[in-house]
Length: 444
Image (cartoon, rainbow, N blue to C red; front, side, top):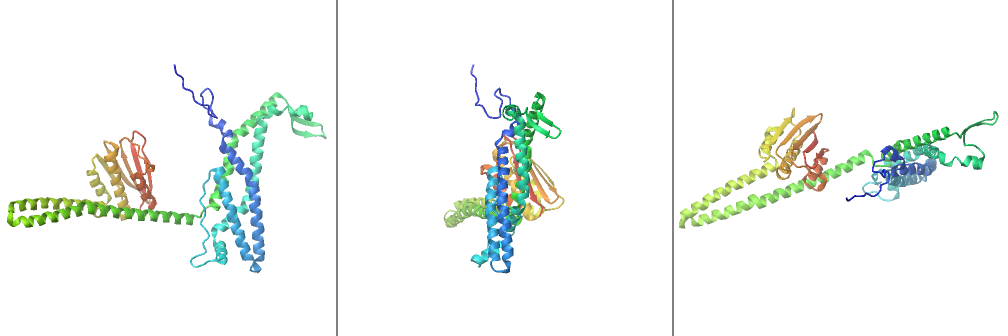
């Protein structure tokens, strides 16, 4: 009989029974990293507070002279530099990734130290760093005292039975003294077995609460670092819009290349061949009228194929039924051409913006193509409805599943297009199916 052995994992019972998460939590690295962050925050807070107060006071005091302005600029620059250190500490110990704030820009056509100092003084990000330096110290003192006292008390009480022998051997006392009054001659020691066990139980309880205490303390630090040392909401929105603009430009360029390729390889090539066939038919018209008639007949078929390709291409750019009749009839026509039976339900009180209609149409079109080619589904459903100021799409199939937006597929491109218009695309496709794609678009 063969027996498979697993390497022992910390936090697991050697007999194979998992240790409860609450018992493992005090020993996890995350808790100790948070404790280290709280402990090191106090000296960092003292440093940043002292620097901010001294330099800002000096700068304000020197404002009666020209020296006050550069001193204030240096104070703001130093606070921003300390902010870099604070973001690095939060990233290393708390796992909090805060983006760099917007850089200091002097403005177009302005250069030199004077323009740079002026940009620092006008920067709201710089002043938020100063606010962080000023309010960080009181919280750092509170969290340091609370975390250290809580942690030290927990471990001391939990291990009290192991080191209680120190008192009678070296201090000539029966145990840890909790209360003493020399005037009355009253002293209370933790020396009986019951008191020792009770002290250990209290220590264990404190240790079990330690992860929650550390998470509560560092949650405030996370809020301060992200809110005061990161980019402003306006700057984040500008960056997001710049990224979305790039996505839209790339998508438009890709669509133009696709249209050019389809015209060049499809209708254009067919029309060139048609022109050559008609030229040959013209030459044979007098010599061999029957052959010329056959060539004209073949050319007539080519004309029909070329017209069909042009119609398909025009439908791919923007279908006429979508413009004339709206999203419901357009999706019904789209479902009728799908190789998988599709049920379409559209509940829209009115038509959304034309651009949103187009995105919704082409999203459903691409998803239905994926269902036809890759899912192996026997049926699919398309539901469209409005929720407040959002258009909701849900496409479901009973195929094999396994779709993933992170695999560089067409779903990733769809997700990027949705991001460009403040939309959301969520794919739930477990192995074996079913697959559900939920999309959300703004109404306008």
